[in-house]
Image (tube, rainbow, N blue to C red):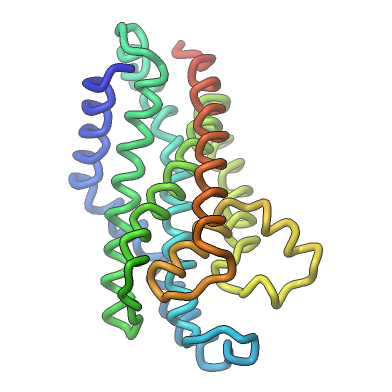
Length: 254
């Protein structure tokens, strides 16, 4: 594993993040729209205390919106493979002595850093509209959960980016996948409000545990013990990361 290659690819993605201001604004518009539309719209009619959940709906939904943002940003990071393949950069880094594992890890680290920075911006915006953070020893775990969510779904995006060779196919597949992943989690609805068969599907979704972990870190309450959330995300990260490395080894650079 070449740490220098990992660092260079990480730095490249971080620089691209800060230089692409229009992309930053564009990726923040949807989370802000959901925060305002759902937080104040549904928040005025949803009574979480009936379900035995403390706090107001805005406090409940903010970790879910952050999870949504991490999901969308991370999974579309896989499109960078398509861009790099088209402009020849992928071929250039493939012919270097650096291992494919180092290249994948560098891309994951860079994408995860960018996703984390945008999630912190969403928290600032949420604080301005009334969200309150419950400070505790668990609060720093927010960064851990955010990075694990980003790593899991960046790996998934890289899998699709390595297998699919055209942008339209990539967008169709990822768009078809991201919305079910978002809605079939506990991002905007408590799991206990849904039918049992839907709950079973949600238990298989890594985003469910990521959002629950961030909810514990930011608000002090969640559905699962924090160690279960961490374990589920670590397992999903290892599984998708391993598949991403394997798929990237098979990618055709043209």
